[in-house]
Length: 214
Image 1 (cartoon, helix red, strand yellow):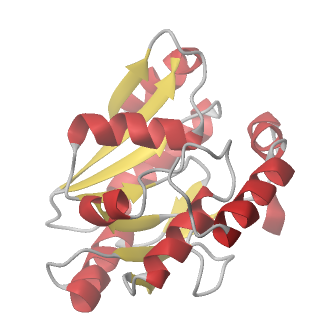
Image 2: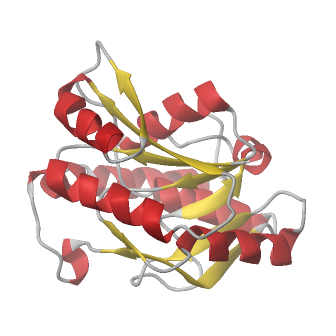
């Protein structure tokens, strides 16, 4: 069973199109689910995602969740063996999930590991979105809720690589339509980038200290 989790923040129409394309292009014969999760401010977005075919989880009493808080909330509830972390600014290619799962099995068999999706931006060593076993996630410290938004993916990838449990699936495409490479900017991107320098400093400090427990 694969739990694909998408934290949502604004972008109602874009998010719905993303949900529809993720479901349509995942691949055949897969045992998986797609859950969209957000804070109290995301009521309309989550209702629309539900109508588009996704499961939804609405965290009331908290207006906003960071990306990593949302991933943690849903993972703690479902405790799935394999997890794919998604976002609402992706363009899923054909068989995006089936190809990642095939590569996972080729690299790790039934053992624990991490397979990165091809996001169209980063090279072999960094995957903002990936398929990871729950056991490995726990081993490398869980979802990095100590970051406001950025660099959590960099920490997880670095730690999985240090254990020899990381690879990347070249043809499992989740293209990241980000302003960094010409995508359209918006308030959600501005919000995420506002903490970039702080997150970068924290990443380098934690790496130098060999990833202390938080």
